[in-house]
Image 1: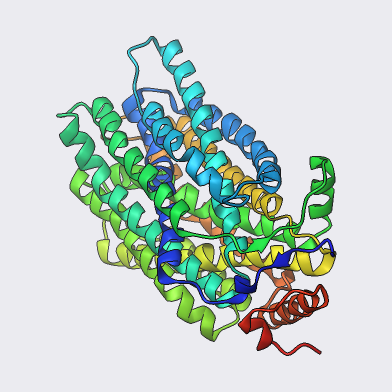
Image 2: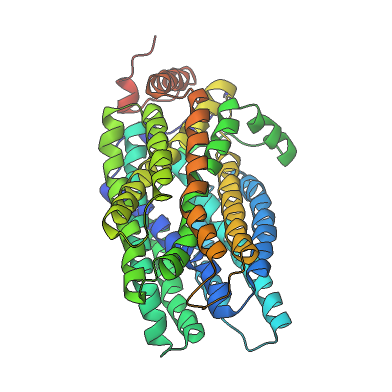
Length: 473
């Protein structure tokens, strides 16, 4: 038997709607917590927990970089996992409860000295980061082994990002009202109680995901050496390009997401009600983008589409710099369009590209190192989060930000506006440039599909119905 992945007969077939929804529920569970981290954690640490912005920036950078380096290790562990549920699914079961509990601990404000609170923040954030790695690497990797059917894979990803957006919409529209209501004006207590609800919901969603999906693609058995696996995956030129594209595309979302609450509070001088509406609007637009992505990719080559959208996003982000924050019509118009377009290219398209890279590695090298492959992308995603979080906190500190002060100084306001507009712009333009060298367009992927089907026949496997429909020459 060859050292390539072995596709089960159903690996090219159609998926049930329940399985697509079940897969999407896993990301919805992840985002019940992740969206709180991305949208509110910097603000929680500075304005609720009471840490200095400089301390927060250092905490984010150090722990998130450390956590990012744990991703390849977790990917290797997944590739070596053997269970009756597969390589990746069991981790959704094992880590669902710790994931929910970790979120509660991280948003708990203990009655300690400032030194004690800093230590508590470091420890709980580190623990939660490792738990997130242990559940999210398997979740992201399982997308590559549910199906090899490109259309069904995009269908799964569309459901994933729609439900992701729905969960984020729930969080962004309810987190501040809930914390005020449950805490009766005490936001520290309110955050802890709110995260009990969010953590419980996340746990149940991951358990539903585990019970709904199946692994159909049997991955190549990895070597006994993580170092050798890393060397093997590093031979994949498209994987190296992909992880760079991942960083460039998550960075704008993370930096704008983290600074949005500061922009609405101190630049727009909005009320709590409007801030909730403003952040929920962005998430609702993300959901619309996830719905639009599938019909667009059915009609256009996704790599060309990805590049064009990045160019447009760069132009629109530049335009944000010139908009008067008090002129709501142009501001909200740009905000809506940016959030719709961003999710189209950084949601289903970006994650489909990651799975395509895995198929390419199997086709070119005869090895499907799914766990390591997705771990590399999650590594860069977390590096994007680390850099974005640190930049936001450090710029606030450098410009003299004072937590909860209604009128910030002019330098702080300009820093917030730059982070909201110009920094994302730079990332979008660079991404549009380097994706020109990504060669896995739709026609090349069709060739890969044909060759993998031919290899399956040569290995003596009974091809699936869809395989029978693929012309093998």
